[in-house]
Each structure stands twice: as structure tokens, then as C-alpha cells.
Image 1 (cartoon, rainbow, N blue to C red):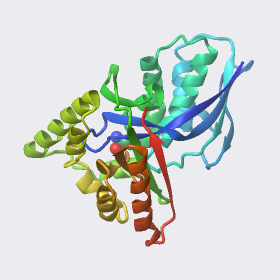
Image 2 (image 1 turned 180 degrees about the vertical axis):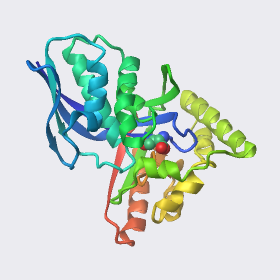
Image 3 (image 1 turned 90 degrees about the vertical axis):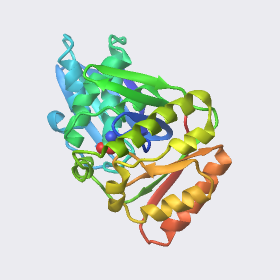
Length: 298
Ligand code: HSE
């Protein structure tokens, strides 16, 4: 009648794949408890870690839970406890972890009537109240794990992309908040054809590189000519971090989701740790507080 779950943090966009690509981090995430209750409805009964609304309709986990609840016919309800470790507005899928956690847990307690694609569709409703638009590039990797590509959100179609065995992510999270809705507002509505060509060539080659374990091609593909030029201005010392990351041997460095977190990808744990030390040095000099961690991509 009760389940405890770990809902992972995720990195969306992965440089060239705005709103479609993402990968899962196994080292950071929220804990949640979902419990069946006699009273019908969805109730958020506990929130620890950050100050978030208890009203079901205003809470990301509550809204996605309601979307699923309205699709079933049961004579009981669910209570949700949220132990939040992922800071809202940090760029590593905080709202997605909440949105996915509630529906994943409920589905388990119900005996898995829904598949992961259907769970993504429910979770999109929760994610939308945080970022004021529907996107699934954090939800999909949180549910499916590893690398994912969102082929479409209406209807939901998610592709699971394999990743090379030795791929690691280094994530730095400066302790400032950037709301996804705000960092979407700085983006242009139209892009130049030449930039679009560069971008879709990079997305295609990145997917090919992941399928073929081609680290050189991976390195050549991790570029973003459309979103990064606008958003990087919102992140203090972004260019210095990127320079330090590449110099320390990373394959590429970009904005994690809508920022301010910055991710680097590296071949092997040793390089990922070197990248971590190099980036740390950049931020240590700025006086801005930060978290930094390394995660294997499975
Ligand atoms: N693709 C979304 C964006 C992810 O970059 O706005 C938000 O976490």
C-alpha cells in the first residue's frame, strides 16, 4: 500500500537537442513516498527540502498525479510525500523528478496498468505548470533512464538511445536560480536557416555517435548554435567554465536544461574527475556557492 521511490535528476537539451534530447543522472535525485489512502483524491502530505505548494493543483507532482487519477476509476486515493534534494530552478530537471515520481509510484501501486510512454503523457501535465509549456526532455530520461530522444509529445513518442559504456557527466550547479519560463523567454522565435542546418547536422551525428561508441564524433557534435548564445549570458562565468572543461579533456560542455547548471561529458571517470577539479577552480574564484558532482550515464 506504500512505495518509496528515487526520482532522478536529468540533463535536458544536451547542447544541440533543445527540447528533444536528455540523459539521466544516477547520483542526484528526490525521494518520494506514495501511499494508498481510503479517502478519494490526491493529497500532498509532506514536503521537505524546499518550499513548494501543498495544494494538489499547484504542485507539479500533484498535477501529474491528478492527470493519471482522472484516467482511472478507483474507490481510494493517494498521499504523496516529497523529500526534495534537487533545487527548483537549478537546471537538472527538478520539476520533472517531481512530475515523474508521483505517477511512477502510483502506477506501481496499481499493478502497472500504464507503460512508460503513458506515464510521460501524465507527467507532461505536471511539468507544464513549472515551465509554462509542455516539454518532455527531462521527463523521458527520468522515466526511461540513459539517453532519450523525444520524437513527439502529441502523441508522446520516446526513443531510447544507447550510450557508450564509459561515458560520464560532470555537473556544476551554481547556487543561483533561473526559472525555465524566464530562460525560455530570452530565446528567439525564429532561427536562421544556416544555424538550423548546423544544429540538425549535430543532432543527427550525436545520435549516430552514441549508437556507434564514436567518441570523436561525439566531441564534434556537442555544439549548440541556437540556444546557448542567448542563455549563456544568464550564467555567470559560463565561458570560463566551458574553456576549463574542454582544456581538462572533456568531449563537450553545455548548459544543462535551462540553466544555471552546466554539464560536461567525458570519456572515463578519470577525465570526468579532472574536469570537475578544473571547473571547481573557476567557480572557487568567483565567490558564488556551487555543488559539483560526477555521474555515470547508463
Ligand atoms: N528543454 C527545456 C528548456 C528544458 O531548455 O527550456 C528545461 O529544463
